[in-house]
Length: 529
Image 1 (spheres, rainbow, N blue to C red):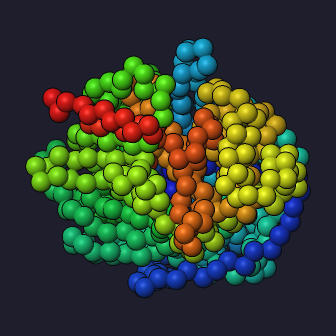
Image 2: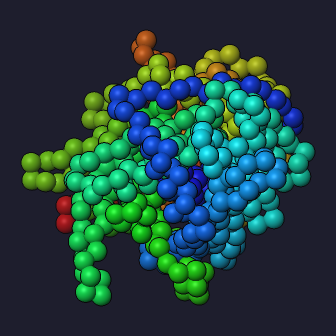
């Protein structure tokens, strides 16, 4: 069940992977490394769970800020398969939700998203995954993933809407099974749990083609009376540990003693266990971005954009958990409890002192050729040549790439792309499309590059959700992450605030401007009132 939740998170973050043209490759799946034992249910427990879960169906309403905008359905069954000549256990997950945002003309636009995932496992030992089918639809655009066991291997085929772009992957050393899918459910049902109990299990990411280590721990045990009956459930923290820490995914669940999530919290969304009738009732949907953004309680000077500010100091009022405490921004708490956030250069005017170091492991990871950032594609390589025009200096390459993407991609908040090739074809998009194209080109140029998220000032009174990139550059014999915003062609932008990767970038705090320093030496200090 948790694997479907992870896929929902990826979908809601608009992380779709698609290939371009035709390619085929063999990938040997690396075994997971963990300093904690991986929990594996017994054969008897798996057989019992198969019997208990067959013909069961669960419905969840999907909420943001207490407004419902979609639903999710999970169901399973067991049957004799003529195709595979054996008894199989089938799981199906379906998600349907509506996104609303302001279009270019200020009118409210609606996009419909659907995701359907079917997985078929052997219902007897060794319980291996034998078929996977996934289809993602966004309005009139769709993509699909089909996988099937072939001997000891697993063959995957990725297709786009018109099936003209195909990628085939043959996975070797792939052994995902019901032992993995049912691990967390079996652990919860084994016995009553205590606070701080922890279980480690694995899932498989069909986008990065890697096993993901999951660590789930009990944070709190809650008892309530429901219709006069004591009801016990757990408040749980779950962490999917990616190959590199920056890609970790954290989410929270309320789980009953049978292991069934009754509430699920991820990237600012809440899933609530409901009846089918209630889950599908979406008559109170409102604009999902109404309460999004970080309010600035005082105002920037009228001539702020007439000069170049190299440092801004804000007072943070409220929950600071969402604010990244490293790289490009300095965070400190004064003796009186005041929380200050400095963006740009620090008081010593040293830009490198506030840049996050880029480790060897990070640089290797963020230089990968992936389905989302296919920088080895001939289309990308040719576009890179067009962008760089023979430039040799690294820092100038970054400047040229930022300007090229800013010019190439027309600002369009109505455009949604399923791949970087869609961006190239349509030449339209918002910060997501700008960033995706920039990262792909930058990696093709040899720069380790990653996407980051947070907020950007809207020029009025709020910081709104935004995405940009960070490029690993070498300076003083070390590597640092340089922020680059290709949407507005800005290097080391000062109008953005980076968020952590553990929470949603929702408005849980406000800001007050305390100090601005311009590059001409002028300093503006604001009242504390």
